[in-house]
Length: 267
Image 1 (tube, rainbow, N blue to C red):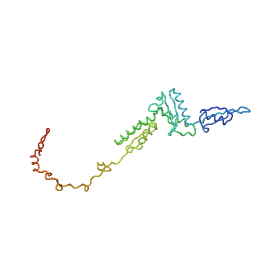
Image 2 (cartoon, rainbow, N blue to C red):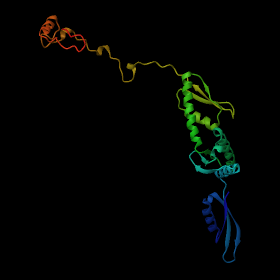
Image 3 (tube, helix red, strand yellow):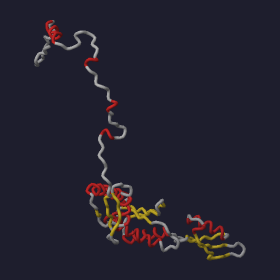
Image 4 (tube, helix red, strand yellow):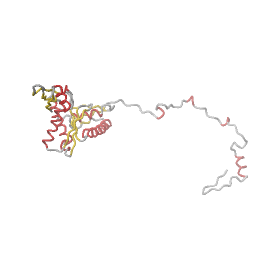
């Protein structure tokens, strides 16, 4: 942990300067007077040391691993709602991620062990590289939905390949609200895998168009009675079609019309 030595006219003044230089609060440090000088005007040399914190120990561990590997990468610590996020970036970040994030997971596990050496630490350590975790979540979520559809359609159980705890949580979370499948994990680490099981649902009755909500079949009693020909009132005598009216209409010449390529219209 970082520490500084400050000489001032009083212990309180030296402590205040040390805290300001380290950028921490008094409860996050420990201090001791290592030297006292002067007869008339006293001078006190105080050593101010930052108390160890699990997240800082993990940060130093990750930086040390990257330095020893000779990789061109930087690490930034961010405090999120999920825990302490260590974002790694740089030209050699692919070597830190590894195949499907296996190196990243190993580094995260070791960083957590380093953080737990500090008494009282109970935070969560997340090591990420170039936003790999979020991209992996999107890929696994799409895979989970596609396999869930396949399982529900075929009615057969689907077993996925072995995954680490992070990837298994993504699968479970993606299908947690799916009404047609359920998920659980089987096997032992590091070969533990997710199983997608189709749920059994009772067959639903097929409904016609008129059975849909808001649609009703017309009732027989609601149908209007058919109108008989005797109830029709005609305005003229020739409104009724008969042979005599047709012959009179033809004599007047109205039946001689152009056919435009089709048979002439006869009345």
